[in-house]
Length: 116
Image (cartoon, rainbow, N blue to C red; front, top):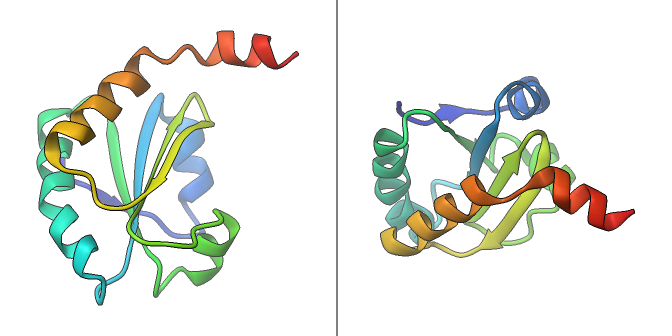
């Protein structure tokens, strides 16, 4: 599965309707974003059971601001509708695979219970 484009209109529904969603916040003028794009696309193709989405921060400035994105690229991961990972900077492929594995293993319910 290739990446999907997210906008303010479909962001929340996409995060809520899918078990795990990765979101890459990027811009066309950003060199590290362009370097990360093929790594992110390859991961999306090898993990077809997950949703990989992208937000063009130039076109979706309000969405990027609402997500508190201050540096790009920024990768976020949502599991069961909860933000479970957020990091600025382009990741090499092995590091992205580690993040994907960690998000798969992350127990959202246990984390929510620990907050109480």
